Length: 219
View 1 (cartoon, one colour):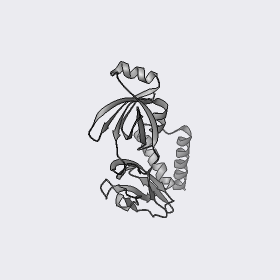
View 2: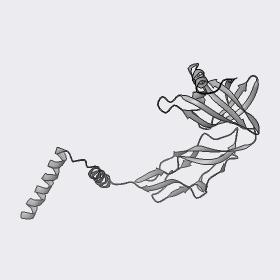
View 3: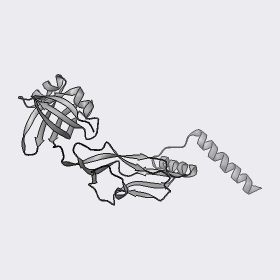
View 4: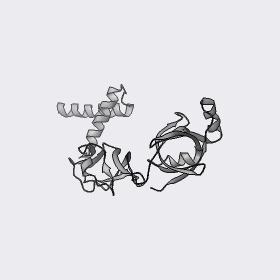
């Protein structure tokens, strides 16, 4: 993953009022800490930071008045309604060190016929070099039959990346695909539990089936 460069400005004002003024200027309040350094309070460009944080585990090179810090996002606070960035906590990382992160799990390939692929873990914890965090971990389901389970220990990890979870963690479960009749029965049961009455057409169809059944019994 390439480094994303951001230009920071030191903050001298704090509190909710100062934070609102920073956001009105299309910037984001942030703090950098870690590796035994004192916390550094900064602001970052709003649009560029929002774009950077769309990538999981984005590696950012932050320029603070000519001094560069390599950082990862530790905590991101967003407005619950509008979604804009309210505050970002950044942790300092060093080249060559490993960090514990969660990366997305990506399913590739086609499982065997009449199967259903159930992704039990959408992300997985790994330890990876700070400058080489994978964008995702792929799990191939090509040709897998119903009843097959893919565990964390079955994954092929890139480079120096190692698992940071229980090796027996279930990642993907391959089950038999339900039949049309099973799907309709489950849907009807769910509607009944929710108190949803069948439509007029469905009632007529059911009544017709009952009548036909009755006629056959009489004959």
